[in-house]
Image (tube, rainbow, N blue to C red):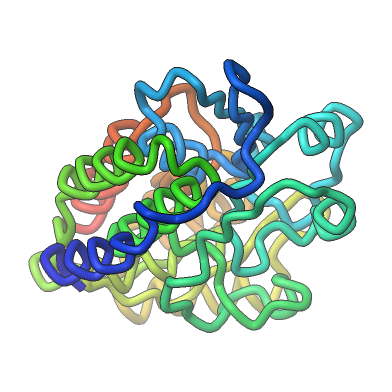
Length: 298
């Protein structure tokens, strides 16, 4: 799960890309290659890979603050952005189910960042991930982030071989910045997570934490009485000092459980929205999550 192995694999995978033939690039000479990233994490990785390449334009599809995309509906502006794109960069893993029809109608090149990631089975809110059996929140582990960066560089190099060397160099520079393995759950007084978002499974595994329970609490689908009783019992049984909501999610049930158990409520970030771009914005968000867990459980 560490850097040297990931870096070697990415380098090997990209050797053939540098000599790839031109794919469906964006237009004639002097025209920009229009790249549309579906989610904010994918946007951060794509802007890292394309940094400084003047003939490339990267836009973000889902730009408003959101906790999840399970019920997202494409707007008219979204459809126009998809139609304009030369390349669509997807998170994959079932996260963009809302785009199935739009993808079928698009002739853009598609980069699916999930293709080389070892996916975990979906857990938490039963039936929440609809038709996928996998958990699509894999950007919450830095090993997967490195693989996603490699997939983006490889895909863009195939579409735009004139800048393949740039994409590869920028990808490697971004991978090298990922610190990896910054938290060891064994160092905490309580290595147990209870979250009110079902996307922290990868984060917990990567940092030696045990995810005891996760509930995706959206508007109109609050936790059931049985789930509240279960969480309350877990907090008391394991002596858990804090439970975690998601930055853009609801905290109503968490606050109620806190009043019942005395546990504090902290906020973690799924990095589904933000103001920055490039790999440093991702690293900063992950650093904030690590600091929050250390403060809450350390």
